[in-house]
Length: 202
Image (cartoon, rainbow, N blue to C red; front, side, top):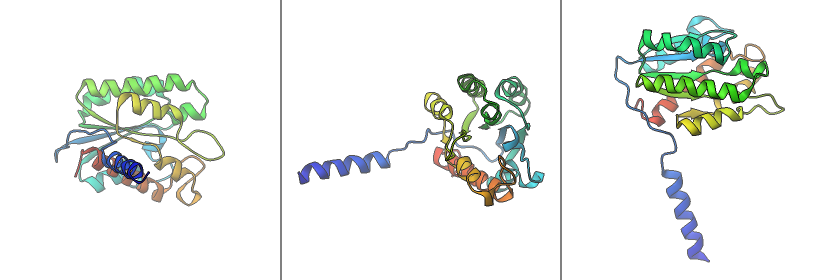
């Protein structure tokens, strides 16, 4: 029995030590990051300097483009993304989209397919992708299931927890669905951590 327990512990430790975050190429000092999404990327509720892409730029020292459009749904985002990828030629796409699809009760399978198409567009241009999950409706906010499926299928570094945690805390919100300056700062810090875990930065 003791041997069996020891074996289970060893397996648990080895499994816990194995990298679970998909790995990305390291970014160079002149890399551009494209933060793409809706109002959560744009920074609704705060000034430009407190939106998460601006904070991310300060934290990483890299050029970060804020490509957030308030109110946008994934079909419109899918149409808008190619021009931005071609214009800015980013090394990394931080994708945080789909919140308006959820709020307006659009087809979640369609939203998932749109996100996957965005990821494919980036990869066709050798652009790495990080995905941020947005919470679904419910008594306790948790990430919408379709983000988990997209992340698993497309094997992208994924943060399912930060936005649900921020939007569950009134002290971190400017209104019911947007962070305040402190909340956006936490969002940017989470992106940095995910970049580090994935090997994009040290």
